[in-house]
Length: 167
Image (cartoon, rainbow, N blue to C red; front, side, top):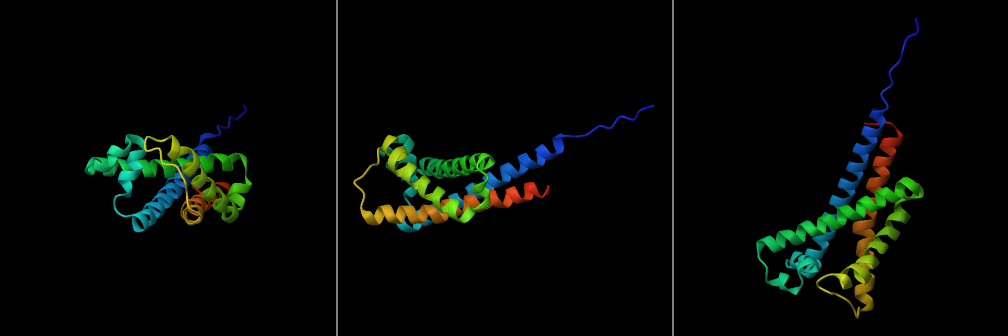
């Protein structure tokens, strides 16, 4: 009589899926927290209203607590979306998780440029230049460090855990 062996192929996928969620959540939440903190320091406590204005238009500046919370939630949605994008790209472009310092810096710069040159002009707030050299450099440097690096290092950390078979 031949013995049948049942192999559970779902276990690696579950741990890989868990690592994906963790990489995106940790990277996005750390990046979002650092970015929101620096924005509050540099631009003041009304910055979540400016973020909400991207969806609601300039009238968001007259909004109350609900508009403020909306701005914070939108900010974290964007940070988590950036982390998800980086994670998804890293599945095909392995160098993204193998070289998190350089790739994270470039990714942060790309996020800043996409936000400044595409998202903000197309938003309901219609924020667009002219930009000063100082503002452009500051935006690039801040996003390289507080967005790009936390996301890239989170993806690298959880990719290593996945490759090592850790659950």
